[in-house]
Each structure stands twice: as C-alpha cells, then as structure tokens.
Length: 461
Image: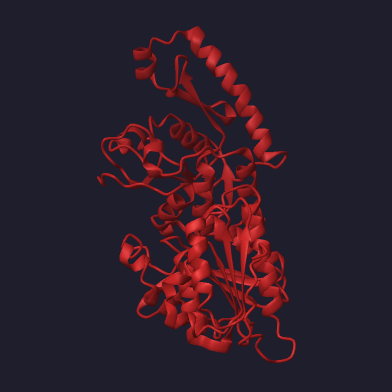
C-alpha cells in the first residue's frame, strides 16, 4: 500500500494501529517477539490485542564505522549474523573494520540479553506462530536476523509486522517470513523516525516494565490471561448506537467501585497515561474500563474528536451497559476524563445524575461541555491541571464556576498539559484515587452528591 505523509504519534499508537491488522492471528499458539528497544512498545500493544505472550529477540545493528546509523548488517542471539553485501561494498568496509564493530556489538548484545531476560529462559517457539515486531524497517538487516532466529528456534510460521517500511520491503524480506504486515509504506522513505511525532529513545527501564506487565497479564506462557481470584481482566466489545467499541475491563476482587475512562483528542484505551492511572486505581481496589470512544475508521475525523455530544452520548450508553456486564454490575460508578474526554464525562454525569458518584478530569477541557451541561452536574468533581498548562488552567477555573455540585481544583506543580514531567502523572493518579475512594463507596445507601461547593483550589487559591 502506498500512502504518503502518514505519521504516528508515538510507538504506542503505532502498535495499536498495527494490532488492528493482526487480529486474524489471535489464538493460543501465537507468540509476539519484539526487537528491543524500540520495537517493544509497539509489540506490547500487539501482544495485548492478541492476548499473546511477549518475548524479545535481541538484535544489534552493525553500523558502518564512519556512519553508524547506516546498517551494513546485524547480529543476533544464537550466533546469527546477517550482512548487507551491497552496503559493505559501497562503504568500502574492510574485514578488520567489520570484525571490530561486530566484537563491540556482540558484547552489548550479551549485556542486553542478560538485562532484559535475566535468568528466565526464552519462550518456547516450537510449532507456534511467531509475530516478529519492530517499530519500522529501514534496510531490513535486523528484521531479517530476527526472523532467522525465531525460525531456528522452531517457529512453525513467522510473521514480520511493522508500522512503517519502504515500498520495496517485501522484496527484501519475503524469503525469511511467511507473512509480511505493514500499516504504511510511504514514499519517499529516508528514516523510520521521520514518520513518528515522538521517536524518542526507548530506555531499558521501559523495556523491563513492558515485559513485566506482559508476564503479569499472560499466565504460564500459554496465551491465556490470568484473572485475579474472583476478579475480572478481559477485553470487551461494546455495541453502542450501531457501532462496536473495543474496551478493557479490569475489576480486582472486592472492588469498591468502577471508573470509566473517557479519552480525549483521538486517543483511546491504549493511551499510556490513562493506562498508568488505571493501574494505580486497580491497585487501590477500584475497577476500571478503558474503551475507545471512536472506531478506528472514525479516529482520523477531527470533527468527531471534538463532538462532545457524540462522545458524551456514547460514554453514557457504555456506562448504562455496565449495569448488565458481569464483574461490573452494581458497582458505584465514577468517570475519569482527559482532554476532550473530560467534557464527555461531565455530559454523562449530567445525563445520569445520581448514578454517577464522582468525576475526575486530568488536563481536561470541561469548558467544552458548555454552561448548560456544567450547571446540571451534581457529582463531586475534581479538576486536575498542570501548573505549566496555563491556558487550560484558566479554562478550568472558568468552567468550575459553573459546576453545581461539590468540586475542587488540584494544580500539580511543574506539570505541563500531558503530565510528562517526572512524578507528575503519579501525583495526578494519586489525586484521582483519593477522590474516587472518598466518593464512590456507598456508606449510607445514598449518593455522595449535593449542592454545596468547595471553592478552594488545591494550590491554596
């Protein structure tokens, strides 16, 4: 497919879009193998969508000595070595230069394999379908080495899947994979990073975190999810107003309430920030539902992203559907909104009245709900805004003045709109958890709503 100009927000979004092309591979015999480090965030989304184990295949690029970003080959575990003879010839690399580069990279390969895998054995690939995932293809050397490694380890079927690659990528790699899957093959193609808005380096800590999360999600390497005793952790498909919306329902045993997330600005249930907050709420004993307010076909339409009526009506329908959903039925309901999702959450709070016991907005745009909606919200509402997000902070103060129910404004120091600064997202998650635990659990059989309004800001204003 030739599509020019497509960009991914980051590797997580790229993984989400790639996973949609791989749904046919879901099954107990599928394993997802990532090329660290950049391929791991992409592969984590694929593994989650396919409900498959996630492992790594450590590969090191062999860069031309005077132009290290240009691959003259790659090496991998089990002694695999792939050379690009054309690059070696054109770059004039001598055998001695190649040996020096390879020796250095083999040392680093061994270090990373120990770092990422520790003393755990690699996944058993014998007789299984193995999906090899990276964040993109440039020369194809590393992908070719990875495919050869998993084949040597006994994979019955090898699928190479990437978000972006050059037009001729299938010519280069069809010999090492049984199936090739790519979201976009733009032209001209110079480097993988040009097709990502955020192509910052993936660190070792992120790789370890994603691998640990995958091990916690998948039990015993068989592709089946572990559910906590008497708890729920599963994917849902929700039928709402003629569309089917994908979601993830997680309810720990003895949950004290459930929080439905309304994502904003085109993001969905794979939003790393909202998933971070959801995990915090799960540890605090609250259930969560993260779902996509828009279908994949609707996401590119910016009008729908800002259509609060559409988003709010879908959120309202999903909240009602939870009353008929096993694992969530009867739990007190809270709403968490980010960006435009905050307006959708307030829309639903106004529609459902006492059924919504609390609302939290993180970096939200409550003003987009409009004065009529804000004036009908009785649910206790917490507005969390970064101190550096001055425009949105002013909009929150204006919207807050129109809210009818009890409310607070919490300003997180040193935080910008996306709470990317170290520790700021944790502060937002803690504020949200405290708010929901204060208002969701039923203590006297009545909703904790009321006309009184707390007009203090959390920063003392």
